[in-house]
Image 1 (cartoon, rainbow, N blue to C red):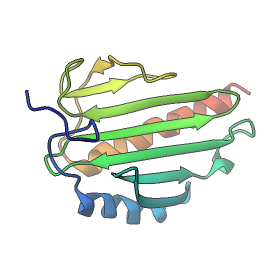
Image 2 (image 1 turned 45 degrees about the vertical axis):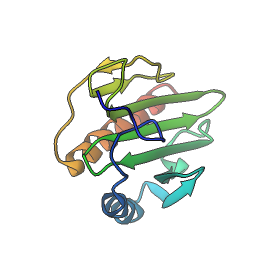
Image 3 (image 1 turned 90 degrees about the horizontal axis):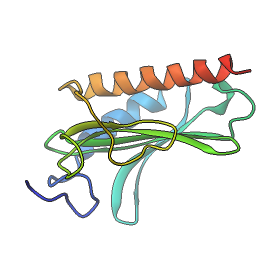
Image 4 (image 1 turned 60 degrees about the vertical axis):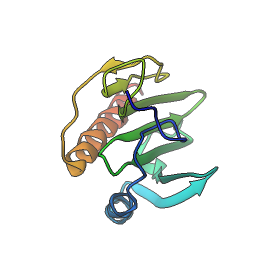
Length: 144
């Protein structure tokens, strides 16, 4: 097995054109406050702030962070925060704890996660993630 790159995600470099595609598409979405490619701590990623007006008042913030690699490995982390945080993560990368495709379920995104299977096309992966975020928002509203 090839060890992960320095960011713990993949042996391949990050794919800036795909991150830029996601950034453009997400900035055009009504439910996104801002999507920005950042390079904090030497880890290039797309940081996405979701518009909290889509959430019940108790949610203070909701975010996605996306890392996409040139070999189609990825890490997509969703998090919302009220009195505590609720998070999950969709991953495709080599690791010792799961198959290459795996999911770290809510509410704490524990490791190891659950083995999974993700679409091959990056646009389909993003659609799958956004569908799950929409289900999370619906569940939050259903709790009121």
